[in-house]
Length: 509
Image 1 (cartoon, rainbow, N blue to C red):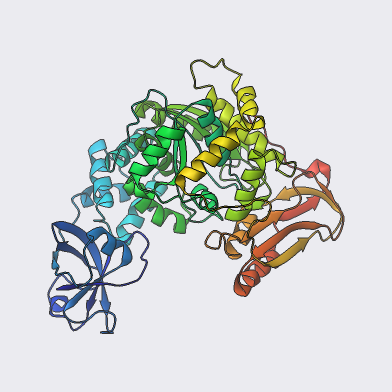
Image 2 (image 1 turned 135 degrees about the vertical axis):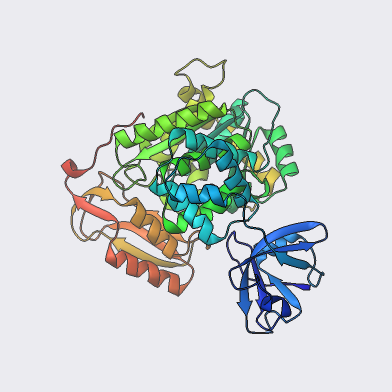
């Protein structure tokens, strides 16, 4: 059959399109939603069949492939391909046992993850696995088995150095762009910090989305390795490195279902870090009323699970429990967050102090991984690197090496359409809903529209009068602004009260 590229993004699922009148479709085993094997030029992929009635999409003698599938096969439009019925995944027995709430072995998880990485699972089967692991919570040994299998499923980088550092946050806090400050600080100290980050899936911006405002982030691994050798760090999208590829497939199911169980979270984060070659990791777990983790006991349970699996994987881990009561920084959305980061690096008086302080403390904890640094001295060293301009110089060098966009934080390209959300009455800001602020920013267009988002004017504990501006929404398209306006009318995300009503959390710094 002749291959035809069908320009449909099926989000991490290989989909093949057959015309209903095609002779192959009429054969047994090639019905809708069945799995087929497609071969061409020595490559093989598995895909789920969808049936097409319009010959303008796929003709009778053609096989269409979705964008992901077409890219994996790596041949030209019109290339001859062969198709065959796909054998059922070898791990289906293990999947059924997990659905029945049985405990799985290391070999079971290895087989399941191999099949997931090879795209042998349909979205239905992936969903069954994710839900089964969520319902019958994985024990800590199973989490280790899953983590190890996810590392083994892809490439594992080796930087040939004894100390390779990384920093990660479990997420859920808008504007928490500390990574873009930590990397240049620790790299300026001389530590190796090759940071590969993800793009946002359900948040208003990921580190890669925000860094892309400043520089190119989709770079070949060889070029990234050169940048890391020259500047001791990078800030890039990790999609080109093939690190823990099964995790990327699982996330495509977990996020739409809003499933983020402890075991799957630990496996996802630690598999990526180990595969990226990290030896030492500082992990940020924010707690707050609208954070992923709501209480200290819950945070401590999660911390112990992370520490157990990290120890089994040979990764040195420092877990830090932080304040997650509200967004960090002023901006929520790629351009606004890039503005905040560059203002902190330039020691601009307009820089958000909460972002600066949190980044310094996290960078300090990483610097204390250096055997030549005495415990407790990391914060002062990080602050000196930032205040002296060395962090800015290192960030500018990394930006230039990756390919600068010429971003100017004094004149950020924000969405021209705006919506001002004001205080309905006088009082003290007693609560800020992280989820609602993130939702408004996404409805306004972030992260797909970099200049969209939310610019916060007040934080917890601030006193406001009726009519004072709480935050400004930026959008580039009228429809996006209307979506955001409707969400704000349902709830601004701000709760006004008295100073005594401001929630208190007990964190490590």
